[in-house]
Image 1 (cartoon, rainbow, N blue to C red):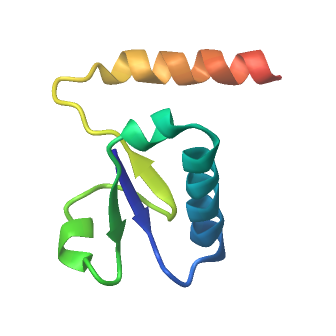
Image 2 (cartoon, helix red, strand yellow):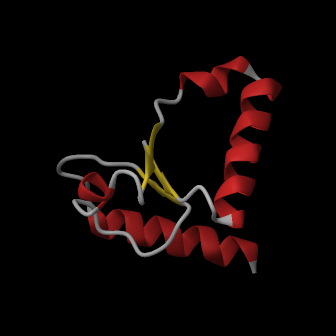
Length: 81
């Protein structure tokens, strides 16, 4: 999984704090592979990906069924309202 963030972004700092809290809560969370990409320092790498805001988590899979992902997201949303 990739995390795109900016050092000066307050939302990014909050997300990083939450990640550290998860790591402290349970060591199993530390097993999640997380590549952190600071977009102002790694702009060439960040420009290779299609995302619109930070913080942004991307899970990259080849041959992933996009229609099924959309359906799953809609189902999850409907359960919360």
